[in-house]
Amino acid sequence: MSRETADAAPLLLVSRPIEGVALVSLNRPERRNALNMALRVALAEAFRDLATDTGVRAIVLAGEGSSFSAGADLNEYRDASTIEVFKRDMHRLWAAIAECPKPVIAAVHGYALGGGCELAQHADIIVAGRSAVFGQPEVKIGLIPGGGATQRVTRAVGKFAAMRLLLTGDTLPAEEALALGLISRLVEDAEVAAVALDYATRIAALPPIAVRQIKELVLAGMDTALDAGLRLERKAFQIIFSTDDKTEGIKAFLEKRPPRFTGN
Image (cartoon, rainbow, N blue to C red; front, side, top):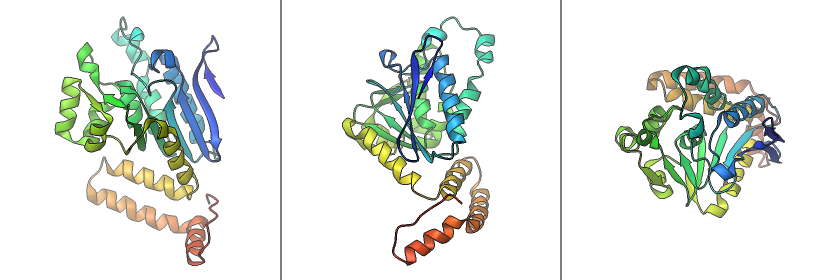
């Protein structure tokens, strides 16, 4: 399946390579997958669809060609006015990804800069190849990040590392991004897609209600006090005892057999 513009150019490719897993690929390789408005809208629509698709339990987000995404398409920014940017409602497009209840694994190679770096940060797990380069260079062209980097980078790497990246616009090689905690795992470029799909496949085989609860708790806990987060976890732990998958999982473990999770 592809998401297309009026001229039928496939900006976004959506496939189901493995049962329970969706692969969403940015498809502007000639522009290093720069995020123009048409691609942003296609991404939001795809994630809204996948969020309610009961056949999908995990999503891999990737980029075609030599890069994940080199950032915003500056051709759409150069002459834009405040009102024009306001009317684009880009926060709603980002929200479709940020609020997706399914685990999202970003498979990153090449450039992940500006909006591309922010897009990767919307994932729950980031698998990066050794060619990956991360950064928020907006300040170098008179802009600031607009897709959440001032908040998400700081939460991921801490104030001082975030300030260095955001205030200088410097880029990070993949090895340093791993050391700072900006990515989950570093692999050879040729292994990025396979490792990301492996994570998605293993997650898709797990009980989806428990997976969704874990994702919700981690994200909610990042924005709340420890005591409040622990209260949320206790309630979620109690609720999970109402699921059939809890009973099946424990029985399968005690009977030394593979579990058969149904999502109930």
